[in-house]
Image (cartoon, helix red, strand yellow):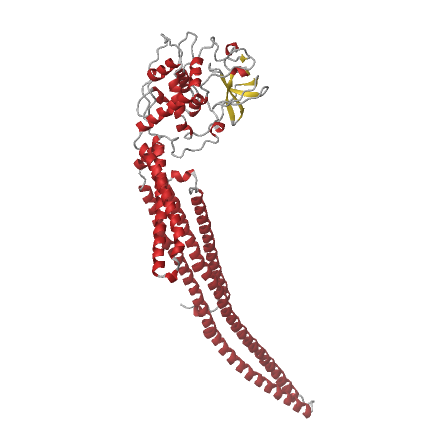
Length: 616
C-alpha cells in the first residue's frame, strides 16, 4: 500500500490532506496549552484558598489550633497546598514536554511538506513542458505533411497540362520534393520528441511522483505517530503525579483519623477551668421576723464574723454565687461606692435632703435582693474602660482563677527555664573557648572572655531568682485553694482595717427605719476583694441605654473607685436610678461613667421609663 502507486493522480487531494493533518496537530497543541493554563489557574486558586484559611501569626486563631480537629484542618490546608503544587507540576511538564516540543515539530513538518510538494510541482511543470514540445512537433509534422500533399498534387496537375511549359513543371516537381523532405524531417523530429516524452512521462508516473508521494506518506505517518505519543505522554504526566496526590489525600485521611474528641474536651477543660467549686445551697432568709440589732462597730463585727461564713474558695458558702453572675451585674454591685454620699454643700444636714441616704423615709434594699435582681433581670451592659484603664496585670497572675493562674505560672516557669538553659549553653561554650585560648594563646586572649562570662553568669543568676519566684507562686497555687482562701481573708481584713469609718458609715446608711441592720456588709466587702480575679476574664460589653438626663446642682469630686466628678450646671445622662443607697449612676460619654450622690443632681427621667419621677 503506497500513495505513489495508489494515489498517483491525487496530488491536489494529498496536498489538502497533509495541510489538514498539520491543522489537527496545531489544534491539539492549543488544547494542551489551554489545559496548562487551567492547571495553573486551579493551582493558584487552591493556594489562595489554603492561604486564606491559614491561621494568622500572633492572633487568636493560633490558640485554636491546639485542638486536634483544628490541627487536622490545618493539615488539610497544607495538603491542599501540596495538592496545588502537583497541578503546577502538571502544567510545567505539559508545557515543556508537549506544547513546546510539538510546536517545534510543527515548524519542521511544515518545512518538510513544503519541500516535498515543491518537488512534485517541479516534476509536474517538467512533464507539462515535455507535453507542449510533443504537441508542437506533432502540429508541425501534420502541417508539413499537408503541404507536401498539396505540392505533390500541384506537380501532378502541372505535369498533365500540355499548355504548361517544361520549366514550370520542373519547378513544381522541385517544390514537391522540398515539401516531402520537410514532412520527412518533421516526422523524424516528432518521433524523437514523442519517444522522449514517453520516457519522461514514465519516469514521472512511475519514479518521481511515487517517490515524492512516498515521502509525503512517511511524513504523514510520522505526524500521526507523534500525536499518538503526545496523547500517551499527556496521560503519563497525569499518572506521574497521581501517587503524590494520593499521598496528599492520604495525609488528609490520616489527619482526620488523628482527631481525638476526648483530648479536645480535655483541652477545653484546661483552657477554661477556673478551679472554683460549684456554689453551695442558698440559705433561707426569713423576713417575717426582722432582726433587731444595735448599729455599732461591735454589732457590725459580730454580724460579719457570726452572721455569715467567710468567703472561701474551698468551702460552700453563699458568697460563692458571684463567679456565675454576669459581668455587668456583678460589677454594678462592686463599683457602687460602699459608703454614703456626702450631703450637698447648701443643705444644713444630710437628713434635709429628701432623697439623701440618711432619710428615714427611704427603705433600704438588702444586698440579697440586689443579688436576686441581678440573677433574674435582663443583663445590664456596663462600660468599664475608664475603671480598668491603667490597671496592669499582676506579676503573679493573681487576677486569674486558680487553674488559669497555675497554667500561666507554669508557662512562665518553662520560659524562664528555657532561657536559663540557653544562657548555660552559652556559658559552657565561652568556657570551652577560654580553655582553647589558654592552651593556644596565639588563637586569642583568654582575658577578653572574662567580661562576657561574668555577664552570662549574672544573667543566669537573675533568671534563677526569677524562676524561683514563679516556682514559689506555682507551689502556692498547687498547694493551694485553702491557701488562697486564707489570702482572701487577709486581704479582707486589710480592707476592714484601712477603711473602718467607711464601713461604719455604710452600716449606718443601710439601717432600716425600725433600727434593724438589713445589709450584709461582710459579704459585700469580700466580693469586692475578689472581683479583680474575674475582671480581665470578661470582654467589654455595650453600655447601658440612657433612661433620662440630669443636671448637676453642685460640684462633686469623685475620688473613690466607681464615682465620677461633675461640675455644677453640667448636663449628663442617667443610666441607673437610685437603688435606695443615695447614689445615682450617670454617664458623660462612652468611656466615662460612674456614681454621684443623688442629692447633688436634679434627675429627669424619660416619660416612657417605668416609675418616672424627678429628684430635686
